[in-house]
Length: 225
Ligand code: CTP
Image (cartoon, rainbow, N blue to C red; front, side, top):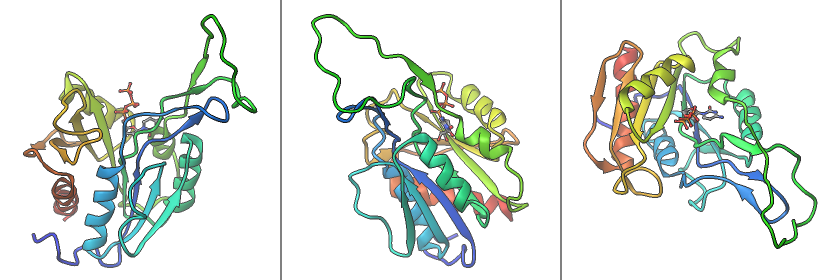
C-alpha cells in the first residue's frame, strides 16, 4: 500500500498528542517529556490518506498542525478526556498517542505562587483518571472503531504493553522503549512494536516518526480489511 493513497476517504481519525500539564500554582506544573511529534505525525499520515482528522493536543511547541486537521487544544488530563468524549462519536480510528500525566496535585492549583521556604515542602499527588479505561466503558461509539494506545516502557516491553492493551480494552498497542536516548521522547526517530490483540506483532526499524506513523496507519488499514 502506498502512504499517499486516499485509503481513509470518508473516515474520521481522532488522535491525541503531546503531554498534559497539571498546575501546582500559577507558575509551576507537573508534566513529562513528550514533544507531541509522534501524535502530530500520525495526524499528518492519516490526513495524507484523506481522513478527516481531529487532533487533540496537549501543550507543544509544534506548528499548528497538518492542513485539514481540526485541532482542539487542551492542557490537563481531565480536559483531554472531555475533548475526546466530545469528538469520538463519529471516529473510525482513535489513537491515544498523548503522554497523559498520571498524577496531579491533590489540592486544586494554588492561587498565586508558592513562596520559597528554607526547608522542604511536601507536594501531595493523586492519580488522574485513566482516559483509555474511561473510553473503553463508553457506549454509543462506532461498532468498528479501532482503538489504539501507546505503551511507554523501560523494561519487559512486550508483556507490559500487552497487559496494557488488555486492561485498557484496545485493539492495538504501540510499544516503545523510553529508556533509549536515540528514539522516543523528544526525538525525531522512533522504533516501535505494533502489537495486536491477537498477540501477533511487528517490530519496525528505527525510522523518522513520519515513517513510523505511516506504518502504523497502514497496519491498521490492513488489519481492518
Ligand atoms: N493513558 C491514559 N490515561 C492516563 C494515562 C495514560 O489514557 N491517565 C494512556 C496513554 O495515552 C497511552 C496508554 O494509556 O496510550 C499507556 O500509557 P503509559 O504511560 O504507557 O501507561 P500507564 O497506563 O500510564 O501506566 P504506567 O505509567 O504505570 O506504565
